[in-house]
Length: 292
Length: 86
Ligand SMILES: Cc1ncc(C[n+]2csc(CCOP(=O)(O)OP(=O)(O)O)c2C)c(N)n1
Ligand code: SF4
Ligand code: SF4
Ligand SMILES: [Mg+2]
Image (cartoon, rainbow over all chains, first blue to last red):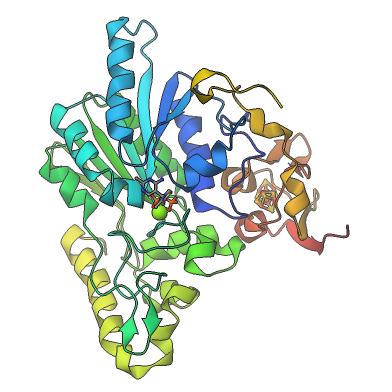
């Protein structure tokens, strides 16, 4: 049962990194006949300090904003040589690289219908540069640019809906996945790779440094995000929902309370409306996708 | 250290030279009598350093950063933590 992982140890991710778990599992499914593209971010930084790499598959990084365009170029290069081994191209990028700065490039990749699987590991902020808020940072979460002080309660607006954005582009395979459900994650990576044309997978990957919790709780928090309804596990083929993971909903507090980025919501009654809005978000997801 | 090639190309898996085990303050210890070889610890280990051998899970202490996720996720509580003495 010994597995030789295609994501090697000795990488420099913080202890308990959710993204590192995700990448190891993704590579188990892609196998070695894959070229990975990453934008700038923690994943790029901890896997590739100068003169080193923890990738056991070909991997390329160029800039923060252009991973999907680089992936398109890699695929075009393979195709121009007839791609005799049927090598697949997979991009793996953070939320900043996906929801914000790489959005235009990703939109182009979707529009061109390039046969690329794009996976976003969402840790809900720009972690590599010190926890700045991104458009994936959820309502009420404190970051260095969505501060908690006085009447400020962290992020003032909801996170962007990346699944809806991918679906609006007519992406034929769109799914969410969790590092607390690895069989499902692997199944979706396989489907995303086999699907002709673009595919998009969104994964929530907790970050103990940015969210403020003990490293050992990473998988447990990923699980709670799903069980509360805050991170629904859903799957769409050609625009139609083909699966949604059923849950027995637990209170959102079980997910929020262990995290420092939400502590203020429990210390001060004046933030009750924010908590209410988070509870409503979970309820809305449960209704929208028929989770319970 | 290898020389940097044009385009910043380097060898695959070169990271394996780095002893990230030095970062650890707690050490996971597997009780092989309790281990049912389910592989969950190896699945969830962010540092690809838990292996399932014939007689149970084995930590590669050269790389283990001591995050203790394996302890948390082991379904039969076969892993415990010890303070790392350096
Ligand atoms: C054009 C450009 N702007 C800013 C940066 C600085 N920068 C490097 S990584 C990073 C954060 C990446 O955030 P995200 O994509 O969410 O990945 P994470 O680090 O959270 O894994 C930033 C802002 C950069 N490298 N290039
Ligand atoms: S999770 Fe526990 S029982 Fe399963 S292989 Fe690891 S140590 Fe053994
Ligand atoms: S403590 Fe963390 S790094 Fe060490 S074996 Fe367990 S899961 Fe892996
Ligand atoms: Mg991020």
